Image 1 (spheres, rainbow, N blue to C red):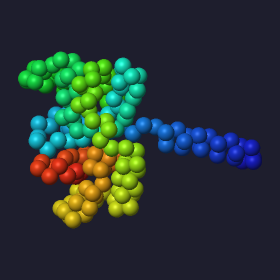
Image 2 (cartoon, helix red, strand yellow):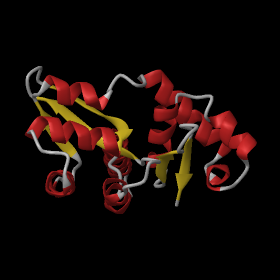
Image 3 (cartoon, rainbow, N blue to C red):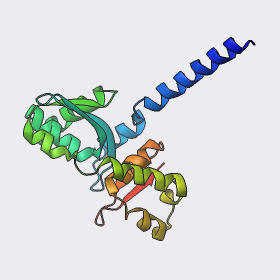
Length: 179
């Protein structure tokens, strides 16, 4: 391979890596569906893109499935009955990119997009890089409690980025993982 060809190959590889690094992280569909279909009082977290159609802004991050469901109820003025709940599930599951548009201020407020900042998420990512995720799937409560000293919603997002389900425990509101 000539020097020019080597340089071009290296440039192409660098561009591909840069594009992959910039690619948004999307929660896998099976975990997203599990979160949306759950009726447990210990809600799952979802990773979604929220578009504010009034302010023309987008936010990609984590919230509980129940908060996202509530926002859809408000946005579409759906009743909190079996039919309304089914419509909400259909709306959420039909968007395979997990992007949702809202213009109702009450719906947007329900999402709590200010629950954590980028610094919180960076700390949670660094924590999981340093400690791994296996302890989150165990009963090592001391390590799980240590991890929950971080912002719990940011921790959930970092867990989802590792391909696991993230959930809020009933009662203590601690974040933990499931396969």
